[in-house]
Each structure stands twice: as structure tokens, then as C-alpha cells.
Image (cartoon, helix red, strand yellow):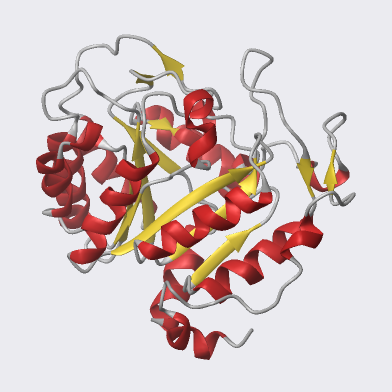
Length: 317
């Protein structure tokens, strides 16, 4: 599809062309789980740039979602000198069925963390940085003050760096969301993760409509918005299609689609492997629905190629 024409497809109510969506079901493209297919094989982390970034993160006592969530792209991304910084500690107050991040009662809030993150961004001379966090539901402000301070200090320390934030839902406390938006990140991301029918097992403390409202509120204030879905965790194709339509109804700009990978045997099992060809089909469908940028593939995660996504969105908006 011609990217130049993406602005003509911005209406969420745009009808899909006659497309073989029914053909996506019951085909060998959706392989039964078992041994990992070859397209999910990745190189082990290593190399000089990886080691430099490893030392920098350790020196500044920072956390990355790359490590905490066992991201399969860590070797590639760190080898390019990019990482997704995770603030508010490395212990989450929620217990999502897909996530490898530690859960429990977080330690005392680290008030110096925003300064260290900003200093690291400046040292790395990043063009684009992605910040995410654990959920801190035990805090009165959900951690939003630390979020705002982190964005503000990055802006001060590295004014040329564009900032993408992948935020929690703050339990629907919209004053907390507004505190983050008030710091003016370039991209506001929040992952819906899966279709509504799977929330009770995938995101039991979250709500699909609440996530959509968060994204919609940000879009109404002029922010570029972004969300992501995992495939292969128990959803059907019809449910994915409806979820994509609902997300576009909230006028979300950027979409990521990736394969769910089970972090440990204690986490939710993989329902099926989705092939690269199938992900290409979903990318076509999502573009037809009006998303300006779609990153779709087995190894895609929310911050994978985030800098390129941001640049592409600027070109087609």
C-alpha cells in the first residue's frame, strides 16, 4: 500500500475491502504450539555496543523492560545502542498472566531515578527514547509524578531527544494521566495487550474499555498515540479484527502486533504460532482500517524499532 495515501484512510469507520479474513482461520498458518519455529530464533546478546550499554545501565542503577520482560529482541536493540528504560522500580503491583516482570509490594520509591534516567539519555545522545514503568497501584498518584519529572528532566538534559512513554492505566484516575500528558511527551503509548475476552486471564486487573478511554483522552489533546496486541494467547481472528476496529475508533495512530511468547511454565501457555505471512496479512488489514504506522511480525514488541515508527508517522501524518 502506498504510504503517501495513508491520510486518506484515517476514518475509523472505513469499510474493509473484501479480504479473505475467513481464510485466516483454520489454516496451517496458525500452527499448534510446540517447538519454537525457525522464525523465532534470535542471536544471543553480545558485542561492543551491547557491553557499553550494559555498563551504562548498571552504572546508573537503572532497570530495562528488555531484561525484566525477557524481550527476544534485546540483543538486536542493545547492539544498536537502544534500550527501553523502565522506571518506578522493577516490582509490579499487578499479576498479569503473560508478563515476566516481578510482582509484589514494591520497595520505597526512588526519587532520584528521574535524574539518572535523564543523565543516561544525555550520555547516550539518543534521538528517541522509550520510557515505560511497572504498575504502582499502591501509590496515591500511581507514580505519575515520577513520570512527569522523568520526562521534564530528559527534556532539559537532552532537548533534541524525542520522548515516547509507554504508560500504565493508572486505574482510570485521569488526573494522573493528565499529569503525564502535562509534561508533553511526543508519543503516548499504552498497550491493550489482548482482546476483551482474554482480559480475565491475561490482564485481570485491567479493563479493555478503560485502556481505550486512556488512548482516546490522549488523542483528543493532540498526542500521537500508540498501542500493541499479542497474538497466539487464546484469541480468535474475529476478536482481533473487532479489537483493531475498536482501537481505531479511539483514533490510535501507531499499532504493534507480535507473537506471545511464554516467559516461564508458570505463565499462560502459547495457544498457537502465528507465521510471518499471517502477520503481514494483519498489517494489511490494520493499514486498511486507517492506522498510520503498523509494525507487525512474530518478534515485534511495543518499543521494537520505535524510533523508525516515530519518523514514519511524522512522514505520513
